[in-house]
Length: 240
Image 1 (cartoon, helix red, strand yellow):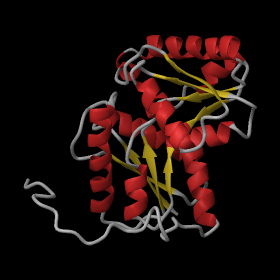
Image 2 (cartoon, rainbow, N blue to C red):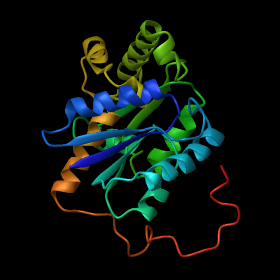
Image 3 (spheres, helix red, strand yellow):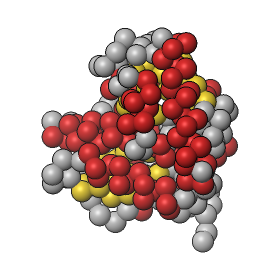
């Protein structure tokens, strides 16, 4: 089984970290193929960058030369999953939805702890669109930028752990979802501080994608995710 795990930003070190987290939970025989988009921002922290990343991710997947069994979109609260589902027959799993759906098996309510406050509305909108917001106690921002997770990991970890504790103590969250692909591997510290289950979106997405492939399930094509109709695209893709 081969899973494409696509970072939504262009930072190669983050793609590597996401790929390592995915590989650490993959079953024997599952090959993890990390992908970095060819264009876009080095971190995705707003609507403009998110919409651009959606195009970049779709193009990266379309250009991949080898067959694959499923795709994981490794961006929290980002756009584009629906476009991938139109383009592909294989399962497409978004880490935002994977984390939230997994959390609902573990507790009555969950909270998402993310990076900057401006990411909060994007995540709330994605959860609402996916029908997963009803049991979301809160979406909280740690105040750390995406690239701070690499530039100052000690401060980032502390901010995430403390915001997770507030979600449990003040918002009555029973499960924490780590709200950024770059937060992979931080779960143990949050568990130590809060005592609640912590869901990493990348890890959850890998296990869900593996299950869908083993069940022989594919993306429905009868209506919402039917393939794009043949069209003439002006100046697309852009000349290199």
